[in-house]
Length: 157
Image 1 (tube, rainbow, N blue to C red):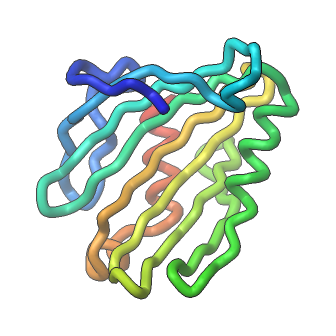
Image 2 (cartoon, helix red, strand yellow; image 1 turned 120 degrees about the vertical axis):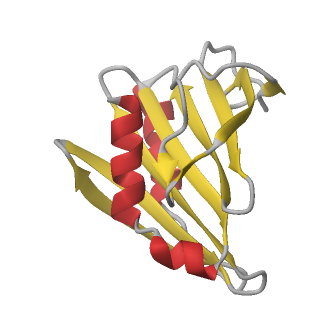
């Protein structure tokens, strides 16, 4: 779990503009990534953000130790079956010249949604993720998986 504190986000000067608003960065931090008992140098860096009344989210950079660890992370992202508590759909979309995986999730028992977009750079063993959550039904419908994929790519371009 990353240790979070107030500060500037090292991943972007500002979070991407979504739903006509740019959120404020609330917390940033570093932390380990992977198995707790592994002797590795993998890590993650996160920037949490919040647009009061509209949405919350996170930018995340994961640096894996190995291709296998990075691939497990991608495979886990792609394997998101739906349950009675959440409707999940994962698709791979093209944004610019990149393939981006996007998870769309709706919580029917607590009506709200989220989107997560993930890009994996195998040469760098790096995974970047943009999450947008706390979306009410209207805001969820106003946002598309393609918009989230494009926001991820433009943020990290």
